[in-house]
Image 1 (cartoon, rainbow, N blue to C red):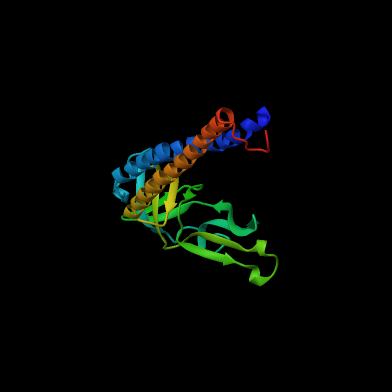
Image 2 (cartoon, rainbow, N blue to C red):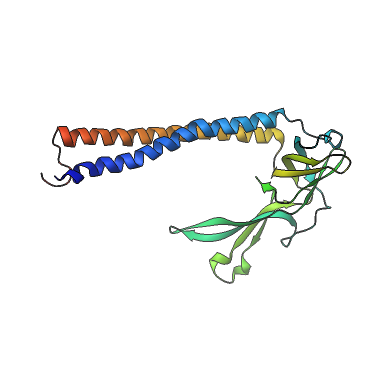
Length: 229
């Protein structure tokens, strides 16, 4: 067995195992901490009313519903949405997000109406519009639009950019949930991240250990892996 053949299998095992160890450490330690920090921020915030939106630059949490003041989109009755197109990948059909339509949104909360600046992110959605081209054309023409329409309940997390009688919220995330439901979602995400990180660490550890064992057996015990010596 040549020298490079002795190192081939251990090298492959280590090349796969070490990235798994690194990814596992990040997923198990860093990601749950980031989620926990965000959850603590959300938990500290009180659900706002018009009267409490008076500190410009403050992080705010709104529970309300989409106002009918919001202009309709090109995919009625939706006023904001994410567009998905059906694509074939590795022999399987999947839905790929191709764009997000997030114009200015008006949200009704206790005491009045809040303007949410455009380009917010849609974390979860309430309504759906399907476009299958009436069965005509290729399968890849099939699209789904998931978003919000007037009267849909929303949870908005963002920064108050304009205070006063006509408050404006920017840098927002919008979801179809309440504060309590969102905190439960974050708790589940922390749990999933910890176990996924542990799985990566175990796999990475086994692969890296396998690399070490293979080196020992081939170099010190004369084990032949690729053909005869």
